Length: 220
Image (cartoon, rainbow, N blue to C red; front, side, top):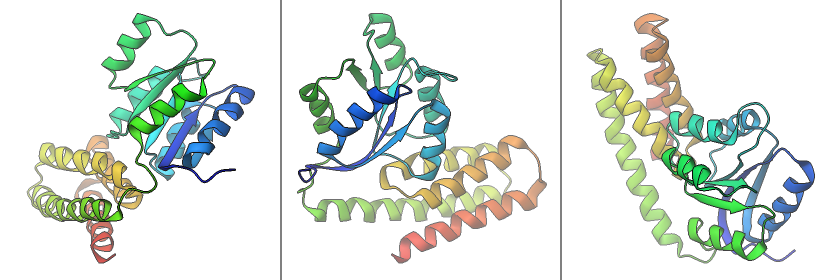
């Protein structure tokens, strides 16, 4: 197989095995990593393990639909691009997908050139200079250090609205930089506030995990 021309991790959520296999092979020609899932639930679990750079989601999934899967992704604070996969490219489907902050449609049966066009739009070329990526990473770490300081003050003052705002922003930003440990820690802060259980100690412990994750990022 030729060396992939694009960087990034692509999550493919498609319940029909044969269709999923064909699309995954097309993706593998272009992308450095492809993750396959057969349901929205499995896809959401995969995202919790490793945030993708792009997701391609079948609309007609069993269980939670493609629309519901996208809605859950955005509710969790992820902002990576998501493409709908469907044989019914209707105006209504397009409109609903865009309203949920989806980025485009891939029509079934999938044409290789059309798929490659989508991939080139949303993924970086393999030969892009690493200095630009390093600069982005540096700015990301700096912003996370600043956000951690602000989160510490909000937790200390028990300003729960502010805690939610900062933690949600941190979690969403982590997706683009594959900072899965920090993303999970920020999610635990959100859970402590939303659940309103466990009291102050649980929130303090969750914040400590965020601070530790940021410290490890800064040390890399």
